[in-house]
Image 1 (cartoon, helix red, strand yellow):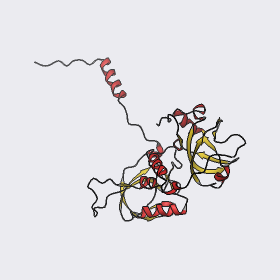
Image 2: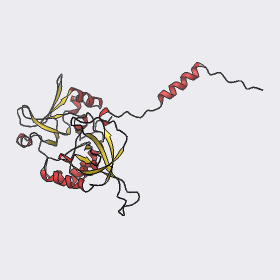
Image 3: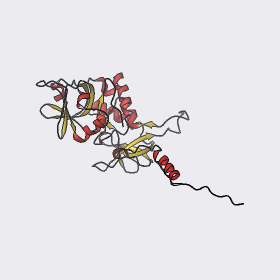
Image 4: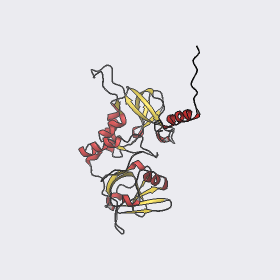
Length: 275
């Protein structure tokens, strides 16, 4: 005897479709952080400012860090990387190539089979290793997003321990003379935001009172929108302890232009939610 199939009504189909749509989807990576498939290469040497020279003839830059500008720290960073010369690397490219045709990458060094390292030893992370040793600062570069926010935690540990470049004090946000001495250089500094001015094209964060000589941070309209999406506003930033990073410029006094929302960290109270 043939079995009759139960009819599937439109209501059942609609419920099934809605159930599929309700399933959580993995968050899409920001365009700057889109990762290409990993590939293997060998570290053949170093170019200027820590550029990786690879056996394949390609050149790459470690993503998420700022190469140190202090000569002694830069030499230590170079020596740290050259310990891995001739070793196999696993490279994951991030985003598009830069204006010089270089690929920004995450790079890990596979354990040397000729050593007595534990079988479960993890590959050495070049970016994380430099940051944890205090030999580089975290920087999103020209991108809107820091692809590996966990690097900020590694940097915080190096800063607390006074390792590498963190053995020297950062310039105070209210010390105009000290800031001007770093003009044109990448700095990481922190202080309390005393005033926030929202304008059509830019938002201004002042760390010194009007008439005093101190730091002003400028935030583009695009970056300010990203900060607002994370729950920050002029009212919520005013009076907060904030860490900022970027390259110092001169504009009515020492000015730091923040290109990425990840380069502003709220340090006191509840942090703004990450995306």
